[in-house]
Image (cartoon, rainbow, N blue to C red; front, side, top):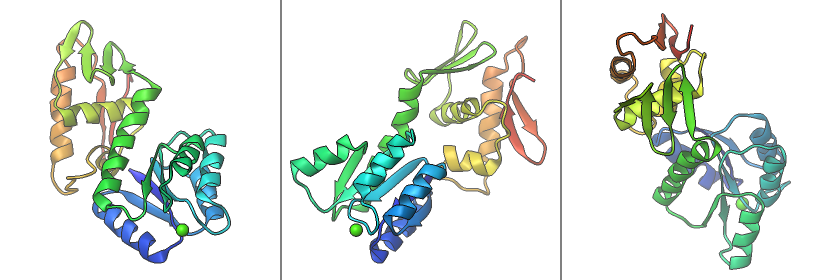
Amino acid sequence: MRVLLVEDEPQIADFLKMSLQAECFAVDVATDGERGSFLARTENYDLVILDNVLPLKHGLEICKDIRTAEKTMPIIMLSVKSDAATKVELLNAGADDYLIKPFSLQELVARMRALLRRPKQMQRETLSIDDLVLNEKTASVRRGNEEIYLTRKEFMLLEYLLSNQGLVLSRGMILEHVWDMEADPFSNTIESHIMSVRRKIHQPGKKKLIHTVPGRGYKIDLL
Ligand code: CA
């Protein structure tokens, strides 16, 4: 998951960047509001963390810029003010959540994870290819009339492949989007999960859907 952090206080920015990297997020930092607004609108972030009081442009305005640009990634605002009017203003500007400074790193990460789980489920309920249907709301998978039982990780892996149908996904991309927390880039965990998902969805007589692209990665495609 790739995150943009817009924070002008260098100590807080450095601390958050390091801490979030340790939590397996890729983090870009902008230290003023103009740069933050530009990056948020032109790059593809999974989530944006916005300090409210910033040089050149305030977080509230950046929030509005992002939503005007029809970007739907979750936004967490950081604010020193905790009154009800400020909170309402932040949420009305398009923020999904806010934290009052000072806050704990654990709380920020927990809220980020909660928001990162949410948007996809709101945008659509099912993903499908051939007669394979994955329902994000009920966390269930069917092939034809048959229910397929996947572990949580297998489900996330299949969900990621299906969200990027026809595209080759490298091990790095899969690690970044599916494995965030406990990822060990040197283990064969991706390979073994791909194998078990294949075994479950490639039933006899059914079309093979998950393909290995030698030297590059994996894709799900009708071919
Ligand atoms: Ca500030």
